[in-house]
Image 1: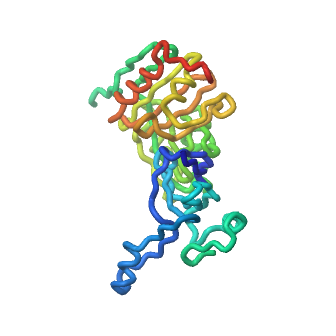
Image 2 (image 1 turned 120 degrees about the vertical axis):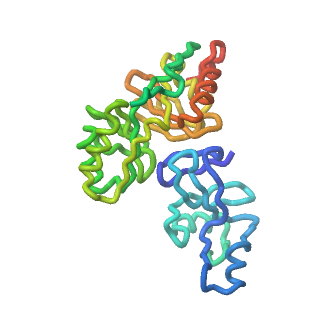
Image 3 (image 1 turned 60 degrees about the horizontal axis):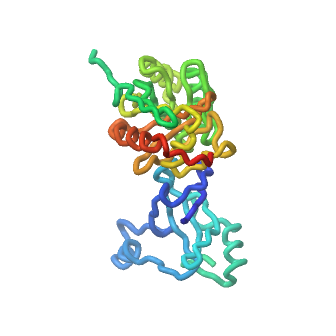
Length: 109
Length: 188
C-alpha cells in the first residue's frame, strides 16, 4: 500500500487517508489564452513509466493539498513537498537523479 | 429555548472496552494564522490553553485546544460555555483575520475506556496506536472505517472520538463491533 508523508501534519498517511488529485505543477490557462493552450491545460496529461509528480490531498486528515514525487513502476516515493511551489525542491530532484540519471518530466530534469 | 439533546443521548456499550456517547459537548472551530500573536493571545484569553503543537492537544481551565490543520484549531469546552468562549475569542481577536464558529450541534463525541481502548480504535483507523506511537494529549484527525473523525487520548488512557453528528450512529456501531467481547487482538 502506498504511504505518503503529509508535509503539513507530518503523518505517514496511507492511501485510504489520502485522495489523488491528478498531476502536479499544472500551469493554468484561463481567459485570454488561446484555444490550444486551454485544451492542453484541460486535457493533456503526462502518463510516464517511471518518475512522476502528483498532487495529493490529505482528505481524511488535515485537508491540505501537497505534492509527491514517485515512480509509477516501482512505487518508490522520492518525497513529498508543499504545494505552494512551482517546481520540486532540489533535494528531491537529487534523490531522483541518483536513482534515474538523466530523468526528465515536462520541464524538470 | 429548545431542549438540546446529543445525537445518541449517552448510549453506551460494554465489551472488552467501554464505548459511550458522552452527551453534549461544546466545540468551536477557529481558523486563522496560528503563529500570529492576535490568534495566540485570543486562544489563551478564551480557553486558558496555549496554541498546541502539531497533532497535539493543550489543556486549559475553560477549554482544551486541539490542532486540526496548519490553520485550524478545535476548541473543546462545556456545551453551555461555547457561545461565551466564541464571544471572548472574537473580542480578543479584535478584527484580526480569523474565523470562530460554534459547531457544537454539528458533532458527536464518544469515549472509549478500558484496557482494550487502543485496540478498539486501532482496528478501525489507519493510525499507529502503539504506546510509543500515541501518547496522552496526542490528537489525530483521520477516518474511522468509512467516515472522517478525530480523536485524542486523555491522561487516564481513555480516548475521545469526535465525528459529525450525522454519522454518530454509524461510528457508534463501528466502535461497538470493534469492542465486542472475543474481538481482542492482544497485540497493543
